[in-house]
Amino acid sequence: MRIVIAEDSVILRDGLAQLLIDRGHDVVAMVADAESLGPAVDEHRPDVAVVDVRMPPTFTDEGLIAAIALRRRHPEVGVLVFSQWIETRYAAELLAGNAAGVGYLLKDRVADVSEFVDALTRVASGGTALDPEVVSQLMGSSRQRDELDRLTPREREVLTLMAQGLSNSAIASALVVTDRAVEKHIGNIFTKLDLPPSDTHHRRVLAVVKQLGRV
Image (tube, rainbow, N blue to C red; front, side, top):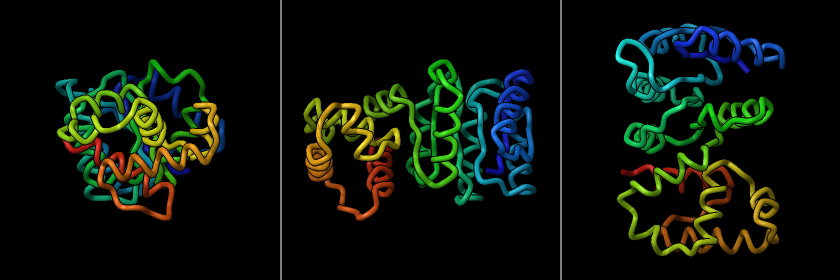
């Protein structure tokens, strides 16, 4: 993968770059502020950008705003938000625009480098990678609460795992149920959320993420 990193902490930025380089990926640019992200992507056209949320000058939500602008200019470039903070307003806007190739992981909850690289690869390929806590907060703040309230507790579990980008088989393994049971739950979810069927797993997941992202 060709990767751009936007992270104001030099230690985290250099450390993440080295981890990715060691695994055979090409870190084509590293920037320390959100304003520099767009020009770096314009120049290098990476497969994916890793973006922190709170960056100079105000350390509030510059990274997410830059990520939204990036997706509008380069929808083909994946964006993985990697932060300690959850900003539901802009996260929902990022997902609602076009959720294909969008991820949001929390730094403190990524326990394994391989897990991070797998998520980054999925996002670069047009999939999703959302931390369960991010999904939970998006669901809690959604205007579609009435529709989400129709779901059973098990269907909510399945929905959360779908939004993380897991396949049907992976969901079945995580919940210790059969693939057929997962397919049934997914069918119920789309019926209750009034989402059209799709032949592609990623499209189904992305439709759910868009639904959750409309705050």
